[in-house]
Structures are given as structure tokens and as C-alpha cells.
Length: 113
Length: 112
Image (cartoon, rainbow over all chains, first blue to last red; front, side):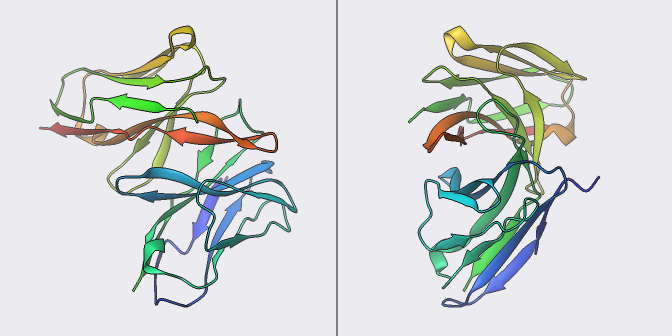
């Protein structure tokens, strides 16, 4: 059982380039989430999705785009990467919302030069 | 939004020692999770514990929801316990959904 996977695990890109981070889960969980982790800020929610074709903004959505055409995939796109988007990105999923456990992927370390 | 505070921020233990980590939250919650972020950066689920006590090997957790705190106990610590321990609770994101709000973590270093 693969669980939740992210790719790539490490990425270096240049300012202004488009980057897509992939997230895939094998549990058929309804909810999926994208967080970023930065020193001094902890983990913050970027976007979440309640089901296929349903997405909504989290705490820090600016500069990011998401889509969810299939339940198992939830890609995060940085349309024009900036240095402030250098971070570690975590994808997570849960069966439902509030009262259910969230499970996290291994993370993607993104560096924007 | 809900506030989550963890203490202590840093903790250094000799191998074999016991420790207690605390998580306080500012509002009632239906869910609380403890995570261990290992030195490689992975977030590992330790406990899902909205209330009561759970044990898993050398680790146990207790949540007293009415008093808005949770405790994580680590007994007979090992060097592999090193890392950052986070607690997280749901906060309302709008449109009927919730996000996890994380505390700032307790950084644990276990020395041989």
C-alpha cells in the first residue's frame, strides 16, 4: 500500500518558471491538502480539496494554482515561481474533514533561485 | 482562529530519560493529532487523540478536551526519538471544511 506520495522530492528552479508538484494517494480519501513549511511560520495551508473538481483556498494561496480532476491526484502549480516560494511542501489527505486524521506525504523541498 | 501553543520549545535528554511535552489550544476541538518530524523532514503520525489516553510502545498521549490541553509522554528515550514534535488541531477554513493548525513544535534532542 503506497499511501500518499509526492514528486519530485527535490526541485531547484529559477525565478519566473512554472513548476508543478505532484501528489498521489491510494486510499481514495475525499479530502486532500497542500501545506508549506517555513522556518518561523510552521506549517500553513495553501489549498485544499473536498472532492474531485472541488477546491478552495487556504491561508496562503497567492501564487499557487491547484486542480483535482481525479480523486487520487492533487497537483500544485507555481505559475511563476518566486524566491519567497522556496519552502518544503507537504501534501496530506483525510477521509473526511474535521474529525478525521490527516496523513502526510514525504514532502517536496523546492528551491527557487 | 484557534491558537496552539507547545512547550517546551526545546528539550535535550540523555538517552533513557523520560519526558512530557505539552500542547495547549484556545478553543474546543473534535480532533487532535501528534506528529513526529524526523531529521529527514518526514511527518509521522503518532496519535490521533481527540480525548482520553492512548499508548503506542514507549509513547503515550493524553488529551483533556474540557481543559484544552494534550500531553505527549516519551519514556526511555532513544536517539531515534530526536526531531520535532508537533500537535495540530482543526480550525475552520470556510465552506464547511477544516484545516489543521499546527503548534510551533518541540525540538527534542536525545544524546547518547
